[in-house]
Image (tube, rainbow, N blue to C red):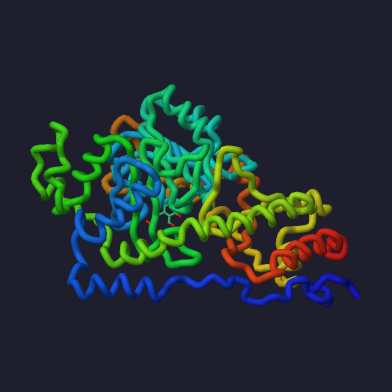
Length: 432
Ligand SMILES: Cc1ncc(COP(=O)(O)O)c(C=O)c1O
């Protein structure tokens, strides 16, 4: 009989329910109850919402910090801050998520997708540079699954072309580049607060978002964009373009819900501990997997300190190292061994350029008015994307594997998982 569990052998992983870290539910309830009792469940710019913004601002070391209702609105307000609008283009990697740039699209700007670095799965700065035109208003760098983009190369491009970088750190609260916290480096950084601990965004409160910047003008533009009736708004609007606006500014109110921020405030307390623990697990797992045929862990740039839990830890399957064993068989064998391994194409089931709206175009506002339709505000007709446009992302999207990011795994679990990978690699010929 084979040693492989899928062929009747004993599974390598026998430890069940490996995560021992417990989310701080009592603390969350306490913070939420306090607000309910005080009837402080609406408003922004004072009380708990302001305290949370100040804590997060100090945590990342930025000059300004605003909370909003969702991560995608944090990124939308960042695009508004850089004066993004109809007829602009923005560059964004095709391995990503529409929440990064949905706001920019709905402001009338066209996504220009770019390819990824095959080792980190993150935006490829060389490919970015090839796609810059006179219409490029911003570059969205997504720190996907908490791994950090090459911010040196992107900052260099930004300086040479005068194009701002907007970082999407939705998965990366607490991450660093060259010893500096993400959120304090580029022109603007957006974070999501969506989900619940432990598997949601690293700081989360159900729904919500944060945007940070060191630029006073960007800050004031974002206040004007979507912070109607925020306490202290008038005093904060100091620049000539905005100082005369009244507290209804431009009419939009996308502020965060105080109850969501109360829960997020609790999550922030344990962020460093959770990140450190997870990183210790990640390092040990990745070090061991580097030596095993069939998988390679996603790499990080030397200056990057990854963070976060959302999306788990990513590995890339290398079928050539296992005589072409199909990925489905490889994953099934690991699952039979008891390894909690996931396999999905890309980030959300497809690469961004292959979504229907970007393959075929879409008449966004009807009557032929759309940044992804015919000619629009100086944009040439939208040609549509197709399979073959991004060879690196397309060759990797179907080979990305996921292991959950553990904080306090039970003793011996990691070793059992490593054993399972070794076993499947050693016996893979029995599966051919
Ligand atoms: C990479 C990325 N960007 C942006 C967002 C948008 O965040 P939200 O869902 O809070 O709007 C998400 C949410 O999952 C995300 O994963």
